[in-house]
Amino acid sequence: MSLTRRQVTSAALAALPLGAAAAAPARAGTRRPRTVYLAGDSTAAQKYSDAAPETGWGMALPFFLQSGLPVANHAVNGRSSKSFIDEGRLDAVLAAIRPGDFLLVQFAHNDEKTTDPARYTEPWTTYQDCLRRYLDGARAKGARPVLATPVERRRFDAAGRALPTHGEYPAAMRALAAQEGVALLDIQALSLALWQRLGVEATKTYFNWTATEQDNTHFNPPGAIAVARLVAGELLRTRVFAPRDVIRLHNAIPTSWITWPAPLS
Image: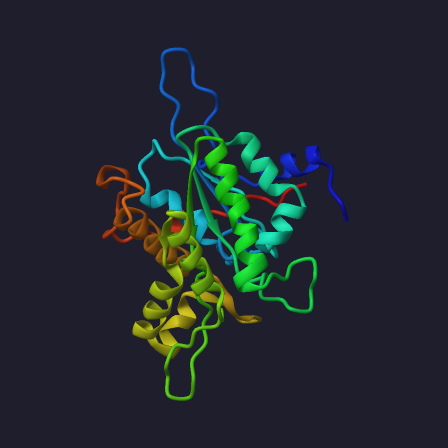
């Protein structure tokens, strides 16, 4: 189904997490907060009460950023770097983003769907071409683009070794970041190492495993908080943010801080 620009923009604005929306225009004499815009897929997206306990890591990212860095979460379930653009969602982000803001981009899970031409991209060609549109668009608006390799799924071999699942996509993103001089958050490598440390059984408590579902892709509150912590740590390590911008990096975050608003009407 094709969406009008107005529908896409309205949906994107409505999907902003409660308490973490982009700031309203600054009053005269006040400084407008820098906003972190997030473009991505279901692993990062805002979830609603009908999906609980499934939790996108973008819902937990504000817990690690000081209040002057609100998060505008435009990540949407099922999107690839290509379909996010084709549906006008990147245009909606670029219409809102302002100089000094940040555009954090994480895609690959759905780019990998070779049987779906609406979403599939090839790592070293069309995937990189799509990602360049995010980088160029942010730069044209005076914002800073940041690339994040895709968070890993929960997959282990018979010997209990955590397995990478994203093929060439992380390497293609790393190469593009180096070529374009863009900060890279290597969440794929860090999450794979985290799942290995936790092991086969403990990782189940980080993913959306319930009495009726065994989901090895999406997170529950502990998993979303853990991945958001990795993202915040990488934003600090790569000097996208200064130490004063990142908070609670080594503190326990109560899972009760995660809330799921009512579904959009």
